Image 1 (tube, rainbow, N blue to C red):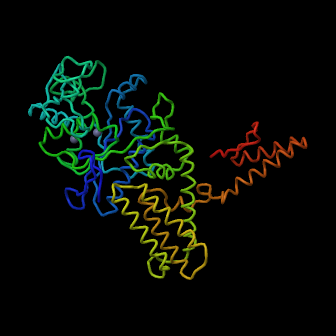
Image 2: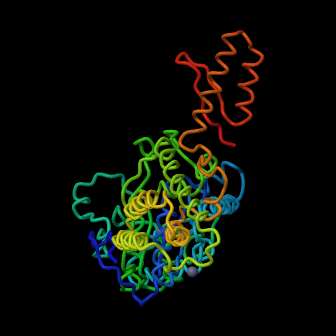
Image 3: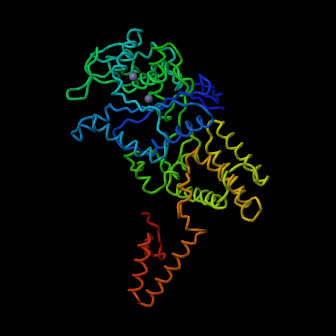
Length: 481
Ligand SMILES: [Zn+2]
Ligand SMILES: [Zn+2]
């Protein structure tokens, strides 16, 4: 299997430290607000990476942290006049509601920074002892110039940057890039006792401390969003490798970011989708399908039109699977025996292609593409009658289900549900019927029979279809319930 490793900046053979075991750490969220589409993307990408590694027979240990003490959390707590930990608890609860809804398999452990303060303090003490960190006014800073390989992940050359730098510098620091390991608390802020001032850990140190605690000095995969490469992951490497003298993570994987209508998603731009807002409009399977139809490293451009288009595509796939299930009724086991040989060959070719894509840096976009290609071949193959139809359908259903579940883009309930993904709208039938009713209503209005015209409009509305009279005629949209 090949994966793209950010540190070596190339496609690399993936060989775990221990055969059939993969230890991975993925940076989680700072819990001061609701999770948005960007968080959903990172979670879905690493969920599929984890599922595929398990599918291949690996035992996967996956650690995802919560940053539950941080300036943003403290600011929000001040604003709401509540305890900082009340804010973080609230958004941790919400995180699990959102991620469970998105069918994210739970990580092995979700450690919280505040539950590892002792461990973090010991880590910082070790860095001071080894000469990589220094104390200023009760705070502790990492001295980047002491770590010769600083910049190796983000490919930044700090000497060049410093030569031309005219940045606002904290006079107390030895080097403007030195970063905080232990921060002194302001009066009234949440704090812990330490050998230095009462305070809290800096952001980067928690991930070094907690990954080491659960996975050891060296582990297989460290993951996170592209935006974490610098400074967060660069600093994690510096901290951990300075302390242990060993390689920190063997492979670094980074997922691309999400743009909304070609702009960077941001609250201030107002183009911001929380996971719960998206789930009101779309099935979690559709959201996953949207995310996974892009390579995990590529940027994604989210538009409502695009996800609606994909909703239709996924609907055609699930309707096909439902038909397979129905054709297969009464077939006891879905074995290869009795399956039409052409269909068996096509299914085998599909499986080989799907896995080939996944083996090539988890190319879910290609894998899904191969699924749709195969589906269109089968769609024709099953149009007619043939003696092996029931057994063939059972086999095809089994194969498609295996990969749909691997990506979690469908499950049996979703497939078998009535009217799933506009399932009743066969070949646009519902649209045509609505247009007929619109004509009936406008005819009634022409005859000045307003009572009946309004009756038609209200009945359609009760069924979930809203009519709008515009200059270009009557338009409609379907209002989901
Ligand atoms: Zn982290
Ligand atoms: Zn710990």
